[in-house]
Image (cartoon, rainbow, N blue to C red; front, side, top):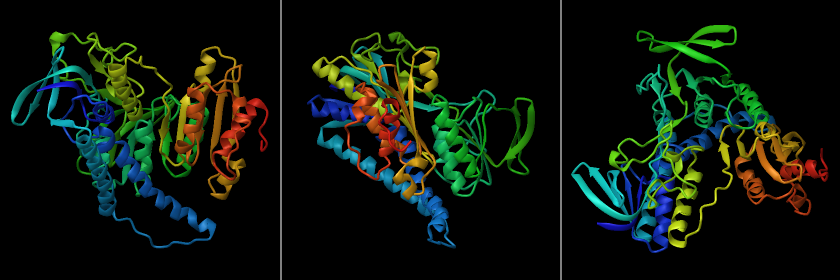
Length: 461
């Protein structure tokens, strides 16, 4: 079979890029080992957010008494929670399959391998077949990483894929890694009844994010009875099969201690999935971490072989992957050079955290003369009305008042961020917000107040 474009990997990059190509009339195929949607839909973003939405009800029940609504003797049905998660994933999977049919995208099940400049070999349970394509896009994503001294066994030591299956609620859960995945699963299991400890070797939670907002998030997690140890190392895992626990030595500065857990969630990042994706004879270059090397237009050493998403490096985010895949289609069909915009990110903890652009630390490291605007949720009308008073909107501008970074920790941070996402992307100045009328009372007013601190038009601070 011959195609105009083949995507190897059916995650956000592969399936959205394929639909975009199909809409433009290209003969398109997606080679995928599993179901469409990839890690994000099947084992990541979507199921985790479904679980977080569910456990938020528990948080709200606990908070309701303060507002005069007392709910007693509620119960948690784990099987129903799992079924709801699976229903959401099933519905969205079927939606992708419907779009494939609508735009004539062929879904080919199997493991894809680029064997030549225009050739893809697909191996499945029935054997193998050769495909030809004018263009090939490798969007194989990433898989959970392990530690040299700690391997995933699926029983005592699990990865995020296994954690999302929600087979049971461990009595004591250790989460190794305080990135987005680790913290989100820590929140889920904490509200479902686990005694949760998070350990992070670096000196803040959600490493890479602005330190000030990360510090607020850490304090809130601790208030929810999640134990958080930053700048802490673990070593010497010891399995006790009689007690069904695994213990570790902990070290933070001069302090050392030992502790045992029922289960360990290993969440120390992800590595690119490139095993068996390229024939050695092609000489496709990888960097020192195994990510595929590409140029500005996401091309490998072969102009018609592209790579995008997690497989080419940070940030490992679904929306970055899909954006790049669609940009590749535009490059192929219209010759439009690919523009690399700032990539926003979010962590769906309680409270949420969202960010785009430079952190304060990054801006100062660049030697920039910056201005910072801050507005706490505690001063906002809507956040007080909702009793969501913990949070901060923080915006960073250069000396010309151009916004270069924005960071929010607080209720609804993920849904508020697109306003600042646009502002940073198009290089708006803080002054541009002065004549924008925000609905009152809303959480988004907090953004206007924070930006107003830079240009002098804030009112409530």
